[in-house]
Image: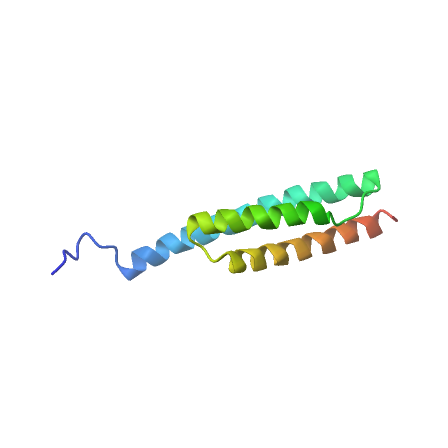
Amino acid sequence: MSDQTQEPDLSQLREQIDVVDAQWVSLLGQRFALTRQVGYLKAELGLPAQDEARESHQRLRLAILAEDQGIDATMVLHMYDEVVKHVLEEHEAIRRDQGL
């Protein structure tokens, strides 16, 4: 029989998950703050909202990172695609707000 005092219980694991979730949301907030700056810069420079070459490179990079972490790359890429979808919508809104 294993020593129960050394094993984390369910509530401890869930508390750790909550911390990681908060970090994940914080990182998304930081990412969106950066992509918002990119959106303003792209609008100022007259660049298109979407950079398909960059997205393709990022998808490959993220798939490799996911596999290195033992995470399903398909799931990671799905999440990335959702983030990019939101970013592109925001970039288009920035362009409209600036009359471009």
